[in-house]
Image 1 (cartoon, rainbow, N blue to C red):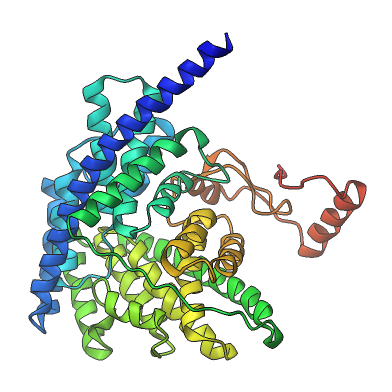
Image 2: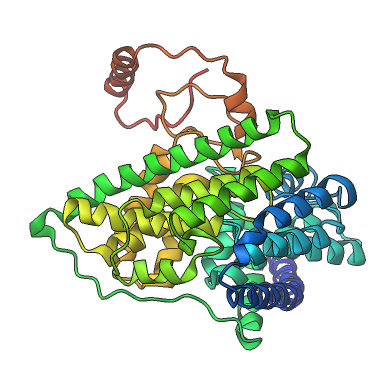
Length: 452
């Protein structure tokens, strides 16, 4: 009987090695084609100093397409919800939407990223492949997740972090171990295909030696709190701005026109550095080059306007930019090394805004080397906790509470938990008193369970 079990497991592993490898090759090729295309468009646009003057027209056109022609737009939130609730059943018609609209926005200087389209293209390929093989719902979900994770890996240039990120953002507090192997294989394969096709990735190992005698660890802990508060503020700002924009009684394409004009005015007033992906300035920041102390605030403003007006593109690249520049600001504030805290802020803000402390800790290892990674991981976890029960991905399922003192209903999407607003919070001293009483009764008990 045991021999039969081992044979079943062996053929199961073999099956998923084959399936995930094929998905990785397909996603690596498709995502690389999109990345090369979007980089070509951006490079051509950068040849003209005033291409950002076209932002009002591109926002108008993108909103017009979304509203009337490409109605089957599928956002990352919708995809997360489909994976959580419907075994990853998605429509393939969203791919032209993402390619056309993201090209319009990024080609003229909108402050957005390219990660979301790549992940969604990957998920679409996984779904199409599952339909072709006529697999059951459980295997379909795994195949969609393989493509989803592989898409992130192609953009991050970090296959392990990309795989974990795609899994971790589904639910706060749960990792799907049964999909780890196929997700890792698909992500690594997609990464290798992208590298072979000429995609270059950001990699900057830091020569880092922590100076504990100068209170480094205290500054690190305070930095984690700072990045967590920044993450919370950014989430609420994007949510509030999007809600406010939706309520404005103006035709949606006209909203795009107005938003584009505002971005043009801000670029003329401040700088073009905060338009587009901003990769050059972000890399300089990681290398320790000084930047304006309020650079992270300006990038946040440009990003909030872009996303709330167009609702197109990914927010991950802007978050990495904001995190790096916020880290540089914090380093100057406390007298620490700029490059070190820029790298720590780079991953910590992403951890707080997306509830992905494990993936971002691995990302620090893959991008910045092993010496800084343990300290970046501490900051990522603190940022994750400090951002509260919020997320840029409203379809994330809340599977665990970040504190036993906060009454939340588990098993619900974060958007639902935050919208209900039915919980009445006791005064803080009462919460602390109750927590201490529970701890004294059983100090070894894990108090992660939420109160209802």
